Length: 184
Image (tube, rainbow, N blue to C red; front, side, top):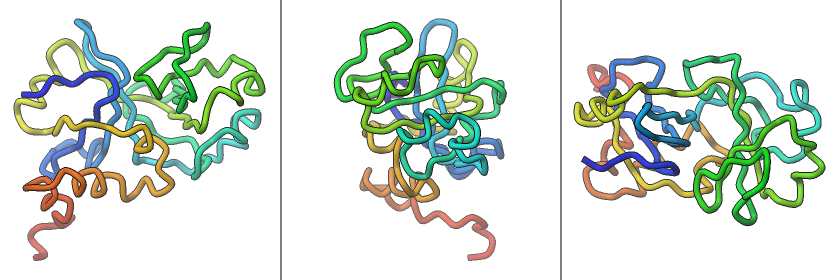
């Protein structure tokens, strides 16, 4: 079993019975002895970022909406940025060399020249100690390498299939798994 680490992707097996994660791609932001935390990358929401956080909207990647980051604490907001260089400064938390979370209390104008895109998520995906590892062992998730561009795709609805296709082999075949296998 591959260990999930910050920056990797958790790609949902289409047989995963939890509707909250049907065909989702989760970016792992943190993992430690207390569990793991990530955001769903392919669930764009109806709220325009410009209406909720107008100062941040010019920095947003397309589509400029607030994404449903997961079923946990949907009132919490996480801002993920693609950084131009590692961000070792107050209000930033590095996830990978190219990705960091950004405190939305910062001045967007002060952040603008340090990012090449950002995305805002309402809620997150969270697992307690050992929970994610158990789900991976049960084959609910595939742990795959992520690319910084995955978090900022302009076509989030196609991300699940796109990530699986680039794996090759049997995972490439899973990308075309039908929504309803009984209809085949």
